[in-house]
Amino acid sequence: MWSAKGYENQKVFLDNALQNKKYSHAYLFCGPDNEAKKELAKEFAQQILGLKTAEDKKRINPDLTFIGEEKLKIEDIRTLISELSLKPFHYEYKVVIIESFENITDEASNSILKTLEEPNPSTILILLAKSKLSVLPTIASRCQSIYFSQLNVIDSANNFLDQLAKQPEAQKLMAIKEYAEKETADLQNVFEAWLNSEQQKMLSGEPKKYTNLQNLIEALNGLQQNLNKKLILEKLFLGLV
Image 1 (cartoon, rainbow, N blue to C red):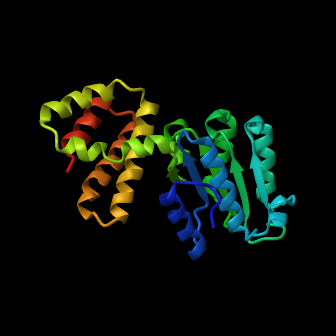
Image 2: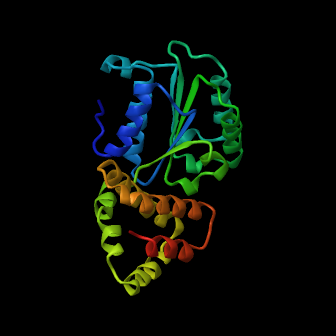
């Protein structure tokens, strides 16, 4: 069903939305793996519209819009918002993908926010950004966030928390010091990779991992609120099970 490789957890989530036809009015695909974000966003949009054949996917479609980085200025976004006020031409929804959303101007970002505050039931926005922290919190909070850390980062994350949980407190304190020195955006990408790993364990039937999963979600929220990184890491690492 999906031609893009990897990110099975994210595909399961999107498949559920497609099967139940229950969509968020806005999605935020975030993380450093730009190609995966773009490819899965396009495939998700095509499946929402029911585009199945190669010919359908190649044909110009007025209900599917892709905004590249070169069109993130206020005049382009105003034109887009004006178009979104119209009903879909052929399909049930109009779907818009906006690339590199972290580079959007403040004025354009505020225009998008107004659209998210009063969403059109026939419009679905998919925003692509390098991280959740790179997007205004008022926008991120109105989107369904899906994380796309690079696959090699995810592979290295698979056992890190399990291994650290077994270490003595002194080892955990050393890890806290090491990770507290990372940039906030880099640390968020690491947390997102760990979150993906823990979610996969939950799906595999390891309910005890719910504690780690919950702590990771709280840690990500703490980073978004610009709380002290060291305190966030202490609560996370010392609370591992």
